[in-house]
Image (tube, rainbow, N blue to C red; front, side, top):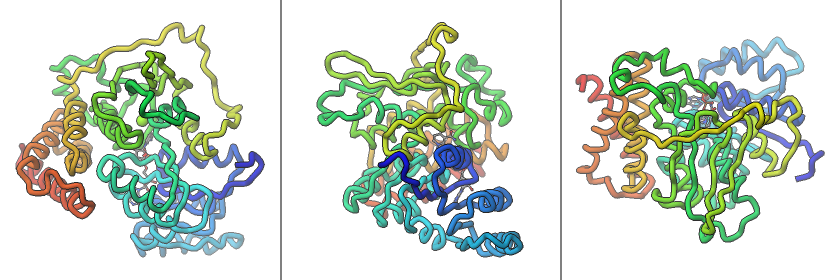
Length: 396
Ligand code: NAD
Ligand code: MG
């Protein structure tokens, strides 16, 4: 990529935490935003349309599309086409661009992601749930269509940066160190976990993120999803992925090579860096407005082993990774439902992992347990959502 070439960017999920930070990167680099989408936050989408005047946007349904059209019809210079529903999102995902950023939360990102792959796009992928659930299929499709997938999540981005330029990556890697901040409950005793509220769980010590990933960070399911994500993206065995708590969140992950040398990627914790790195096709461009690490001020970086007893989500993710088949999809689907139930105050924080574990346990006797076919994985995802809902309504 030429530094002075103006890149055309589409952002799916532009009203979310990653979406908004991606727009900051586009402002910094003066990239052209040609497409935006959101679920239902049309107020913010309207502001984004006024600023970036994209060619197309997509929203969840016709009703929202009509409301948005009403808002923009009075702004004469705006010629944005408004799409809606599944079809609209897919059409947007296939539209011409240099990079499409997939920053939709959860499994809902799958259809637009597959559409972007079919269109042979370069994809900056923030969404981790799709790779966890259907990673092999998604990556095979990307390979088949010649679509490139660049990670945006800070840990896979760190690993990507640590192996930059390497050709025989897998033969040379011993393991990776996947760092975790430990979240707000790192120092809580097992007893304290029983009284965790939604407000406590939404109060992350380092990162400011969307609601679902913040709860996942508190339970450490986020790290669990990431270990599966990383195993898929970099073709690593579960035993090669070592989770390590690093509360300062300065090291975003590390690669240990066979000679014992460890390469770490470090920066101040700020998602704009991995987003920018993915948007500039692994080139380095300045971020003059961002603070840099001052090691003397930091004084020390600390590490501790994760406690799988207080954070069972991590153990469940290791199990799902090892079992493979449709189990990662079941883990993810059960977690999406349980997190929503916790946010809705229907279950306690501890029950999120209990529900996921019970759903996984039940699934081990299901005929689709070992299947790796996409349709079966989609069916397993649906089954897990319904089963977890049932557990929640039964109060177990
Ligand atoms: P968020 O909840 O802040 O934003 C989600 C975006 O997706 C919004 O624009 C929303 O309108 C859109 N959306 C939600 N449901 C949708 C649906 N059914 N169809 C279409 N669009 C829909 O989420 P976020 O924190 O920005 O996270 C986005 C993704 O990036 C997640 O998969 C998350 O795991 C990943 N991620 C986030 C961070 C972070 O710092 N926030 C870091 C690493 C990875
Ligand atoms: Mg991450």
